[in-house]
Amino acid sequence: QGGAGAADDANAVTGNRTTAGESIEGVKTTTSAEDKDAGARLPGTEAARKVGEAAGGEADDGVMSVPEQTAPSQELEKRRRRRVIVAELQRLFVWLSSADVPACGTESLTKAFGWDNSDSYEQHDAHELNRVLFDAIERSLKGSKCENVIQKLYGGKVVSVTECMECHTRTSRDEDILDLSVNVDGLGAGDEGEDADGEATSLHRSLDRYIAPEELSGSNMYRCETCDRMVVATRRVLIRKLPQIMIVCLLRFQYDLKTYTRVKDCGYFSYPLEMDFAPYVENADSAETTKYHLLGVVAHEGKLAGFGHYQATLQDLFQEVGDED
Image (cartoon, rainbow, N blue to C red):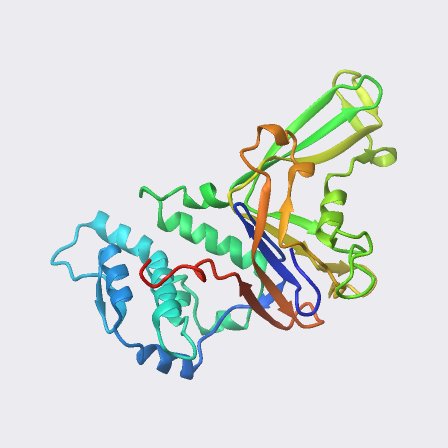
């Protein structure tokens, strides 16, 4: 889920390792009549047939279907229903890669989620929608050999370390994550295309702020079990385990307490094509690798929090692979 300004309010994905960039407000995808017609015209392809067979189904005009069963058991029926979301995702990617059509409809996929026409009017944050998708995939794969695929690809861990400033006792608490959410306020470069700190991008500065120690004092003092009283302490967050694919969500949308509305920070935000996360890892020496390269950016276009469109810009990982491969 790094991001950027008007053309890059984004979710940057960097991969293996992979970084991803910004979750922003958006609307749920709907399907137009033209999209449906495009899907209906989809020609049968060898790729569709192979994927359909791999999924245990059949391909008819390039569309996978579950083979008919003469008296399926209840267990098989439950399993089939659970797998429908994964099957629809699989079919959609076959369309995107093989179909010679201007657009691919997503009506079957949204129906697999249990959504109807009324849901299309509900505003969705891209970060939220990504979580819904991950949860649906995990439920669909439960009981299969791939049931932990989301955790294996995107699962990471951060640790929060609190230190008493009097006895210097440290306590820590782990938290499992599927993405990293960072602030963008005041971290952009002055002019678009330039970074004030040379090679340091907005994402570097945002992560520096993410791991910076926070003082717990005043009304926010910390109760130290060793001292057995409220004390001044410091707390900082570090990455304990890096995921295979890193999704970095930029918090561009904030709630304005003066106007009681959600507002979007449209400032320019830069991110690198390659990045080393070593400075933000608790024990970088023990990590298999801390370097990531950018795979994609999900960008929100629009100046208002409740309106706009999302566009995904992705790196073609197969651009140098020959047809024979």
